[in-house]
Amino acid sequence: MGRLIVVSNRVPPPEDKRASAGGLAVALQAALRERGGLWLGWSGETAASEADSERVKTRVEGNITFSLVDLTQRDIEEYYSGFANRALWPLLHYRLDLADFDRRDTSGYFRVNALFARILAAEVKPDDEIWVQDYHLIPLAAELRARGITNKIGFFLHIPWPPPDVFSAMPWHRRLLETFTAYDLVGFQIDYDAENFINCMVREGIGRETSRGTFRAGEREFRIAAFPIGIETDEFAKMAVEARETSLVHRMEESLENRKLIIGVDRLDYSKGIDQRMLAYERYLDNNPSSMGKVVYLQITPKSRSEVPEYADMQREIAETAGRINGAFSDLDWTPIRYINRTIRRTTLAGLYRMSDVGLVTPLRDGMNLVAKEYVAAQDPENPGVLVLSRFAGAARELDGAVLVNPYDLESTAGAIAGAISMPLDERISRWRGMFDRLRQYHVNNWCDTFLETLEKPLNVPAFGSQQPPLRKAS
Image 1 (tube, rainbow, N blue to C red):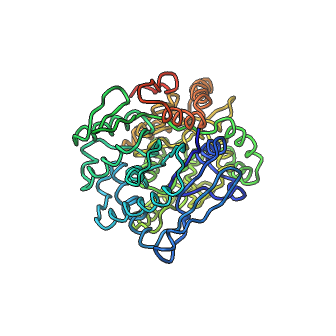
Image 2 (image 1 turned 90 degrees about the horizontal axis):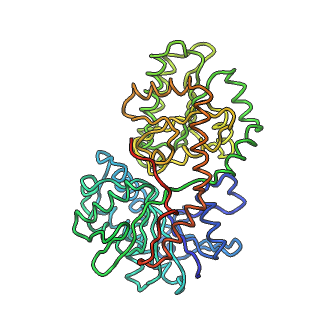
Image 3 (image 1 turned 120 degrees about the vertical axis):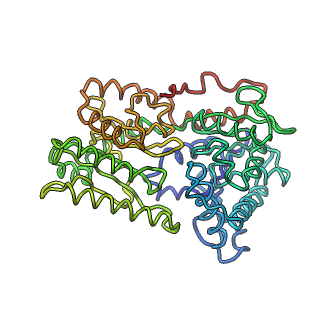
């Protein structure tokens, strides 16, 4: 078995700066350490010229080589800020109203993928397997094939995939779809996304599904499957127990003065439904006047993509919503919403999850949403909190103990908050136990191993069955 090569938009920081690394980075590095390998991606730095962007900076940690590429300002504006985040991101999250389809940005997106392919093609050995991560790098396999690379190449999309009527709104949708045929395995978070993708391919006449999970396009045949990503469950649970002893968590607990705590943790993004969530909480306060002064909602929302105008506008709107609600409901000794606009260490978050009575995870659309899984993992088995979860998060297909809501329905979400706050202990334990057991069974390492095992198997060998976790039925 050859090396594993991982390609992603960004590369993890060095070990000494990675104290708060998430489960995905940990799992991928574990797979890389097992086989030896290479991780290629953008350094996050700006190259002075196009010639400088061809120069690769390397960092070696054990048997893993991290190869970092600087991008020019033009590349960053067109590939990253432009096509990836102003066209693909809103499109794949069903937000056509926010999508900006610019021909120059599209050219930049394919140009940077070609750059990554040129750099990688010079490093690939015959037995290497390549695993491409996420929407920034969809055309990478096609670019590698054009350079004569015949190795196994897999792709995993961490965000949703929309139905044909949404995806086909992008002027270059067919060109992008055709690049997927260069992969040997295309993975999605949930079966709904895989089905949407297959429907897009069939609608465009690019190919057909020859058997469950196998697709033929011209002379190429490849697999399409769902691989729901997990977290490092036991490790995160232990982290949550230990974090309860940190000074910041202690301060938070003392400041609550025995009030109930609702927590929301999201990167600043319109897909997360933060504004709608605050409005639902406002509706909860209106409908439950006896809760005044007894419940606090903590919303932690680090800034994101500040260079994109839509995000700056959204940050202002959410802050105004929080301010208006606090102005209307606050008392001298109580503020209903605590809104924090900065990054909190993952270890501290684990402690805050554990002390919270309700985890409010209500994205308008999400590929999976690992906050939901982390919230469950962090709970006290003898006194767990309640997860209120959007039915439009991929995690809703697995976490059957959550209280599912439609985040667009403020009244029902407010009712779900009320029900979660007052839920009896025995029901809370029952709901939590099933979810926690599932998270332990489908650890993030299981996700990583299952994907790579499927990539390695010949197409005529069944690759699913017991490895593919059963998903909850739609409700």
